[in-house]
Length: 117
Image (cartoon, rainbow, N blue to C red; front, side):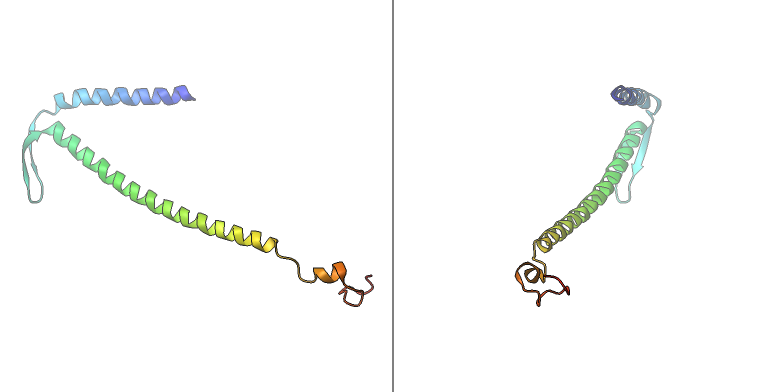
């Protein structure tokens, strides 16, 4: 199974090298980049495409990190709640039962079961 994973990574890296070699050659036209309040000097199309892709990856990563952090905090809160409940169960298991002293050392008159010694 490891070799399949390595093969997939190798194919992806080869594709990345191929695209990085052919993209500048095929898209060397100069374009104007006009943002809302700023206009950049003319840049090559491949550079503008690469920058736009990078900005998209960064925005998606920021959203992913936000969701992961939120889920991690919720999981931490649940783990703390479970630990508190488990300690409460442990404390309740160690409590003596009510009426156990009557069964152990009490007389027959104190016994809740009729006819018991």
